[in-house]
Length: 309
Image 1 (cartoon, one colour):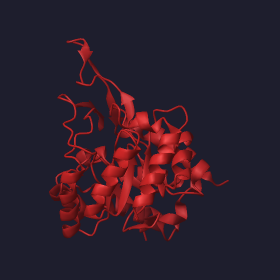
Image 2 (cartoon, rainbow, N blue to C red; image 1 turned 180 degrees about the vertical axis):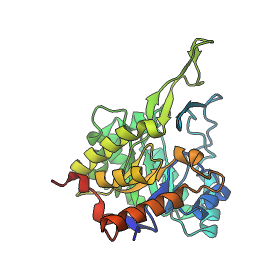
Image 3 (tube, rainbow, N blue to C red; image 1 turned 60 degrees about the horizontal axis):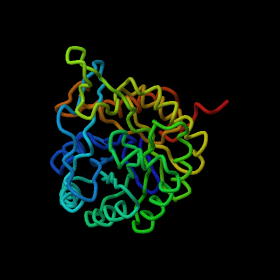
């Protein structure tokens, strides 16, 4: 009833772990898979080990919202191959390898290296708002986005998704570049640039001064971006929605706006049972009940219905 397909990637449900949240090693990713998600996006992995920014890296704003500036810490692609291999031994959940680099050559290097682990798909992170020379600075260059997408597509046999930044004047520009490069899906959105200041010390709280806002506060922005992406590209590639999804009602809104699947991140910490990561089953039950009560037989029946007259 709620199975879905993104490109050629088949998921038992449309709920995917978002990159940067728990996708850090085989043990944790297996735990998430066993909690009922349809797929797992790894932490963004680069060409070499990266320590990230010093603490503090996270500010809790209340009501389930966070600002984070981690700085893309990761063990490097060579080391992470083992984590993918071990995860795939323990679970059947599809693994989506999130990758980043400062240029096309680095993206190719990371993709080629992680292929040794046989991931089920790749997500190109060209949208991190606090990644310095990585992330959104790449996503602002449409020629580079198209080139990176095309070159990664040449060397992999699995779907390639491109994650778009909301911190641009027109998200359709990098999305069009990704589609032209052969992307199998568009992921919308990454976090919003944000800041918090300590009024006693009169300084920004984060070591990096600014970071990315996630949680329910970004949901209306993410929803509008998904709606716009579907209007422009829904007939070309599937859309994966992400940003502030906390309950099944949010899921339905994103699917009605045009998302074929959704990613869940920050809400994991605030679900009814964060220890056992209950949110994926909660979302699945809610979506199933909604479809049944409204007379729909499957998730694809409602994708983009908010666009109908």
